[in-house]
Length: 373
Image (spheres, rainbow, N blue to C red):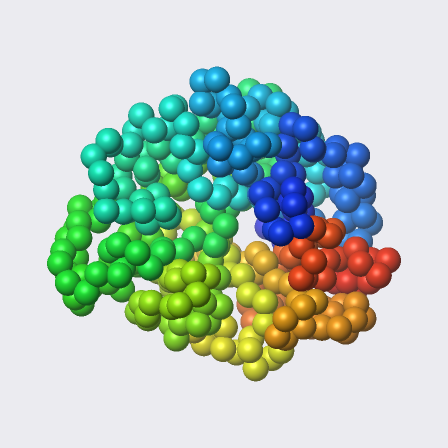
């Protein structure tokens, strides 16, 4: 069932190419059921109880949930693989958290989306365009229905539905405008000269609630998780900092965690990769951590560290697996001290992502460090 105890787990990720390419964990031609089973055995033996996975919904990418499906609905082969994964997890008492990246742009969902040209692009259109909101609600209902059709019991193995990996607005319209007015899906109009922070907060709340309603209508026992990186991760001082950065990576503005405490989501899920205690403090400060803890206490949501990891290359890197394992363990313990009700290490064995240490390296040294009581 959907355990309420401390969540301790990993992210399980297969990427087709070494450059951090597309997610192929459940791809019809690439899913490895035996490897999944071995992972679940190792996790169970070491006292872990949760795995977070990526469901690739990009219609144009080979191996995704929607690649070349004739009616534009979910691929049967992909859903069979996903349900096999759930079945194997269930047999070992482990829960699974799927996360959905964008919106499948197939005929089935595009019919909700207006033809009118929109100033909104990319993620901002997904969050701020009413048609896209309806399309994504339909997609989430379809995904749940596809599991139910195969075996309704498997729905109980889903720890929570993670609405998207690290929900954030992009620094294009309306957040790059310094004047004018914008009417959000909640029906309210905002003055872009002075109300951008309120617009971002309210629109994020509206979107999370819309997705949560769709999920709980399809699976009444479901829990919903909303995840985000910190403002510090993209060199922002905190909420309200809409600076245009030069690096595309930094031109994103995460949903405000304290705003998520007023949504219907069950889990507020923060991701960070600090190199030391000082940097951890900066991450927490940037998301108003004290206020967040109070807000979550009142809302009775769960606070989760859905991704944390240790770098192997670049600034803040750890040079050997032993020191990486020690820091991973320390971070996990710090998270619990700070009031997080669990954590998921990034990642189990993704050798494709060479810049980060994975848990099975060095004969499983990080895994063992994290499993120790």
